[in-house]
Length: 177
Image (cartoon, rainbow, N blue to C red; front, side, top):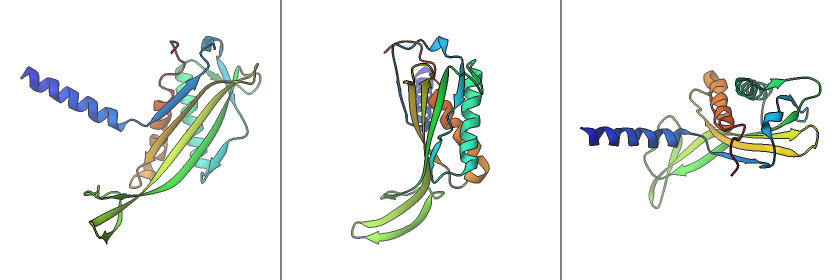
């Protein structure tokens, strides 16, 4: 029985690890992140194929995550600026196995058999934290999130919130790598 429960816990851990968004982080190891308590958004937010609602949802999610970590958004004299780049794209791929029917677009036959064409939306968020004093990047991160096409209209804010949470989960860095 004990062995069975170990396998169940291991299987759940593997499934949860597969559900997280791919995140890439880089930061200046010489930066003392404790001195950065206030921030402001840059005005040059870049987005490709992105509407204003998506930008607003991303900013709200980042603000919530940073507030939970004790940081404050200010309008004047911040310790650092946040630069945001967003890419929202429609991705097509071919699947030679039995597809998840929620994402199936259509199929066609090839010499090797049936090929399912899947269509889904993906959002890529890039954040850069730039020191107000030195104008150098102190932290940057990128995350890709597949947006569920079936529930996207109802849960866009939650899906973006999850991606931002995954991106900022280890901010500020606590130990040097």
